[in-house]
Length: 252
Ligand code: SF4
Image (cartoon, rainbow, N blue to C red; front, side, top):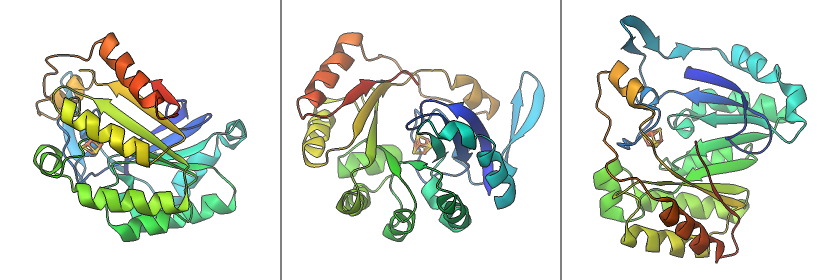
């Protein structure tokens, strides 16, 4: 498996104390991506402060399992392991044997996904995953295709498949003007949340913190010209809460 990072004692990637594994490779191209080193499916050279390095490291299933189990005692607080990326659902062939082993050991598992992957992959992970952490980005078909290269119809089918089986879902909404934060998209998001009730919604604004990662890859990050104000984010929180949904403003 090609990964870029293993983050232990993570508190922002699902319930409790977790170990988050970042798998390398994503089929979308969000211009605001906070992990640009996880988009390519290949190892990548970087240069940071005149020092060269490689984003991406191959690990075996055994190595990964050992690393995850190191913190088993902390998972008893309700935590576990979270697979993130990139898009972890595109690595299902490599991932499934590990999911199987962890399930046998009763390790709680979350997956962070943009969900624009084949239905087959969703059906596989539904057997193992306890909580899905799913992005809501751009819900309009054309804009989704144009701005992030995503297929919203596939996303909707996958949402339907997941909700037929579980409501253990946390939605994550990045608020970026004008891409995800605009009147039309917000209306679509509210309609969507009225239909699909998750455990929780996490809303957050993006920041320019990934700038140095983009520079290290010789890539340009979009400049976030106008940040969402405190009042605007509070208003969204209030609107979502009207659907009787637990909503939290996060500061990732
Ligand atoms: S889906 Fe996530 S990992 Fe992929 S490009 Fe978008 S923000 Fe980055």
